[in-house]
Length: 308
Image (tube, rainbow, N blue to C red; front, side, top):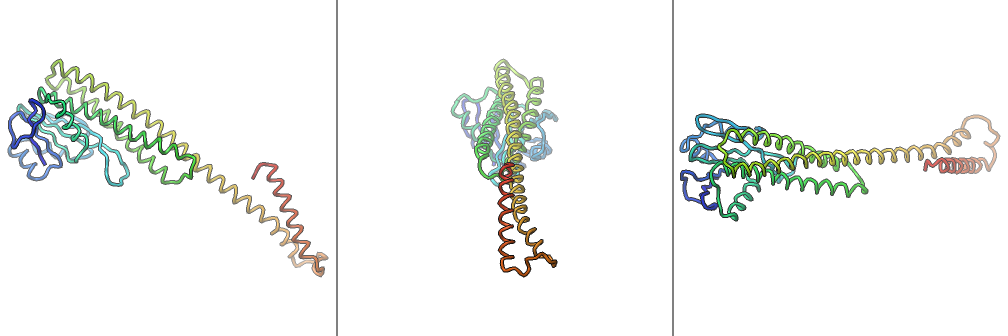
C-alpha cells in the first residue's frame, strides 16, 4: 500500500505521484515494487535490503540514490518469543524523490503522520523529514521502554506468590527485547553521526539533530537501566524457585525420617529371632507404643534444632 503526501504546507494526501512529494509505502505489494523500480527507477536491491528484518541501520549511495535504513521499535501482536523487537525502516532519497518503505504496519508511522498533520507546517525538505523520523523513532523507543518497565514492575509485585518457570520465561523474553533495543539504538546513533556529514544540513537541521541525539542518549541509558533491573529481578525469581525447591526437599526428607522410626521398630520386632515378646498378647501394642514414643522424641529434637 502506498500513499502520496504533499509536505509543503502540512501533510495532505495526493491522488498520484508528484515531484517533491513523500511516497509512503507500507507492506509493499508487487504493484508497489513495480512502481518504485520501473516508474521511479530506484535500485532493486534497495527493497531487498529493507525487506531483510535483520538488516542493520546504515547508509548507502548508488548512482545519486541515497538509502537510509533506520531501526524502529515494533510490537508483535501475536504470542512470540520476543514481544518487543525492532524492524528496518527504509528512507530513499534522490533530487525530487522521497520515499519511505516499511514491510510492517507500525504505530510509529501512524503517529508520525498524525503528529505532522497536527503541526500543520510540513517539512522544509527531505532532509528535515529524515531527522524528524529519527526523532520520532527515539520517542517511540522511550514509549516502548516504559511499557517494558511496567511489565517488569508487575512481575516484581508478584514475587510473594507462587513462582514457576513461566514467570522466568516471560522475563527472559523481555531481556531479549531489551537486547534488540540496545543494539538498534546504538546503530541508529552511529548512523545519525554519519548523516551529519553525508546530508546537506542547515541551522534548523542542526538543532533537530541535537534534539535527536539527546533522545537517543536517553533511550540508550534507559535500556541499560531496565536491563540491570530485569537481570536483578530474574535473579530474585531464580533464588525464590531454588528456595522453594529446597523447602520441598527438606519437607520430604523430614517425612522420610519420621516414617523411618516406626519402620525401624517394626523391622526389629519382625525379625525371625526370639525376642521374648512373640508369645506375649501385648507385644504388638508394645511395639506401637515404642514407635510413637521414639517418633515424638524425634519430632521434639527436630523442632529444637529448628528443622521444622
